[in-house]
Amino acid sequence: MNNETISAETPRLKIIEYCSNLQENYRWQEEAWFDGQPHPIEPVDIIDITRSNEQYEEKYTIETAVFQDETARKGTVTKWYLDQGTASNVVMISSHDFGLRTRAVEGKGWILVYHPQFGVHQIEVGPDLEKNPVVELGYGHVFCFIASSDCKRLVLEGIDMPDFQKEYEVVIEDNESHTPKIVLSDGYAALFSLESVGFWDKFDQFLKRGRYDQSPRIEMDGP
Image (tube, rainbow, N blue to C red):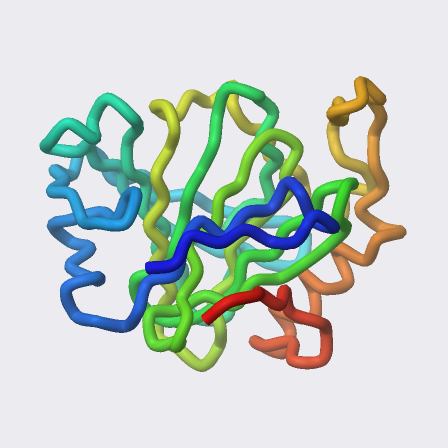
């Protein structure tokens, strides 16, 4: 595993490490990955979620779990199960006190993410990639998970730091023109446009085509 972060041009989006596609890195039914190694977990609850608007209705599932070792002091576990060609809700992390680390453990797809300090990016994820990233998201990130149409389903494993609370995030309705208010590091607070930066254009292109190959990916230094 190599600890790396994106360049100074994108200061708030972090790739914590990469998981190689070794079997022992993906025993995700019994373990979750945190700080470079697996830790045993115990499932707690399963929640079915419906994402819909006037054109469609999609369902996905969230499973929660707790660590069974000392890692329980640092956070809890959430897993997302998305059918091929579908997406999770678009949400914004609204608390400075909350962070989410996530990786794909089955299938393939993308994390689509926006922040006013670095714009819109997508990060390709999947355990069969040579470098499957562990992505850290924090305050002000607007993001969703999208499953490729080329896989049966996408399963993502997330570490909530600390335990997740509903007030830590805001769900953004499809095609909402602006984010909720975001306070930047210099104290500037504003609503930021999701339309003008092309967030919804990329969201639609992913779901209509199942993949979106033409836009730039985040390039990392190092091995």
